[in-house]
Amino acid sequence: MLPPYSETSPERAILDRTPGPLVVEFGSNDCGICQAALPLITEAMAGVNVAHYRIQDGKGRRLGRSFGIKLWPTLIMLLDGVEVGRIVRPATVDEIVLKLQIFEP
Image (tube, rainbow, N blue to C red; front, side, top):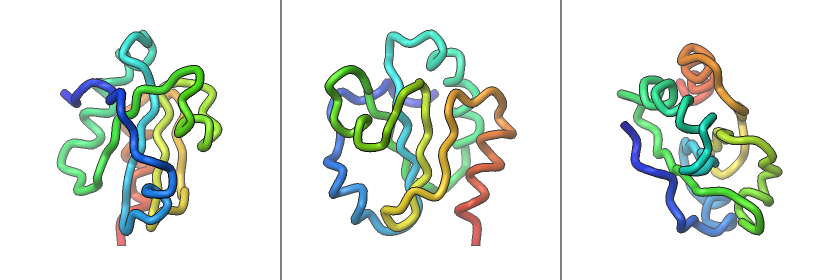
């Protein structure tokens, strides 16, 4: 399983300058929908060579607001700091795997 959502988050400027592929997942450790999606996300990310940040989101959290996060969990796919994909409340492993293919050469 993946670690819990982190209370600390990088600055948006750092993410914008991060080279290569990156998945930033926003959610809450107290969110039932996030907990239900955890096995799906874990399975989809297994064996994928992409950095993955799990960020605790909530009212007043600047990073989530900068990405316009409204529902949890939301996975943002970044490539060289630019958003190239987004999944809101994934329902299947296949949905996540399909979106992660954006990182394949």
